[in-house]
Image (cartoon, rainbow, N blue to C red; front, top):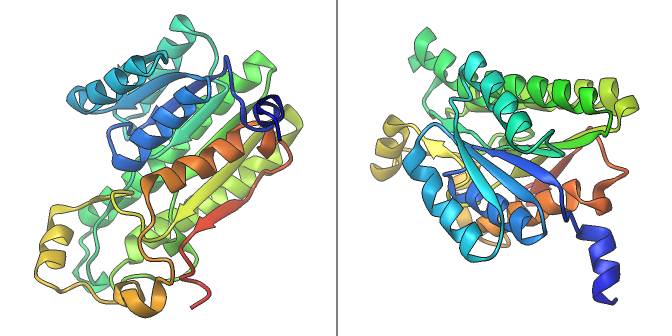
Length: 267
């Protein structure tokens, strides 16, 4: 296959992509891969310091990128993000929602505030970003692509104590299927990428980090030899799946989730 044919399948030259929570490992790779494929990239994160290294790497590689400080859990902040992008560069063609936080603990130990913290980051933030992306894409009448980075754990339990995270991400699955149906007529395609054991794909709550360090996390996901036939995944595995969905290659896919689990569900 010649380079021109590959470009017709995977090229996104001139497209505008917004990547939320761009300071994370997987989101950083997504931003860099989409920029390398020809997109102009907006990196959005609550912490400005986390965005600068990504901007630098994209620009050194010859890409175009800007940063917009955004709190994806705050409705007004998300509205401001899309309005600012519209004024600066126009309507996004691609939106990738990467924000995630896992607080892994027994259900009986969850307080209402701890539960709400997980739901806010892992479900409500996706609602805010999808809603504003769809509003702008519909107004442009050009269509668009939305991809949410969720988890294979929304399909099958991976860790004991993963109830809040799994529930929030299962909520995203339902939201995606409904929105994909509603906006297919507008050529807005909405999908999930659902990784399993990919290092750095999700921020861990400090209490979860402490449990991990004490060896207190249990569940099928900890059985590395039996449940991870392909071992650990890499952040670039997520980025490659995103590129497939947002490019011409993904033009007939909507309302689905690509599972990147290294064989977990098979085992």
